[in-house]
Length: 321
Ligand code: HEM
Image (cartoon, rainbow, N blue to C red; front, top):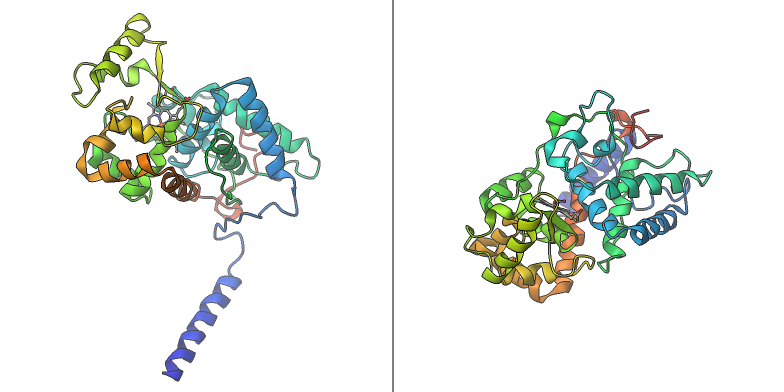
């Protein structure tokens, strides 16, 4: 028994030693205190900058949170979504990203300018980390949970239109599970992450096709939406839940009432396999908040780059150095 224990300790020591021998840049080691010595005021700088962006536009917070998802789900959390290529071939110009609102991009560019106005921090903080922090602020300053953001991502140098693969509003639960399990999420984690749709709005083309044909849609909600989109088929929009500037669990209660705007949201309730999770979050905001924090933290770990894997600290978030 004693020898087994010492063998275990020896194995543990060898594993620890070999980890210590690896060059620090070879493995992405995210840490909440990554910038503590180089840019100690980072979190306050971004908090203030995002506060100003949110004061200027109610779209800022939802657009920024969505931007974080569209960045991390494609080529990892490397701010590749921010890149503007002169030949027009970049993620942003893929049709699935055309509806990203400019306010989200602007929130990140303003936060980057605020960070760089502190001489200590200038060109030391990656755009990918600024995006992760700004997403947290968008949640927090909308009344959602506070959480520690893991940091230490490097920015990617590559962004192409063809690399963009994102889920669509007409996905059923199997298709949603297939996409999100590919990113490492369980079904429950996916339901928690989609609670991000407690913020913001969608344009008519994303839900108009359901009106009148989707039996899971509440009839009075359907006629309300018909009115919204018939007058403005392209520029009309509706909120994703009744409290679109508050990060809360109203999104899930809304699904219980057949008032989910997107088909991919409503299916979380209409399919028996995920309904229990929706019911749980609808009655227990604390459980939603805890699970959302775990899920958004996991989102932030996808495909993280390091200096050794071709990453860099971008000087301008729109262009590789
Ligand atoms: C099944 C997966 C998803 C689908 C099909 C989907 C689709 C959409 C669509 C169509 C819109 C409306 C866009 C517009 O008209 O402006 C939207 C908005 C939004 N999405 Fe998602 N989304 C998904 C997952 C996520 C995730 C995982 C997050 C974040 C963690 C997220 C955050 C948001 C936010 C905050 C908005 C509001 C944006 C705004 O008001 O500008 N979405 N989403």
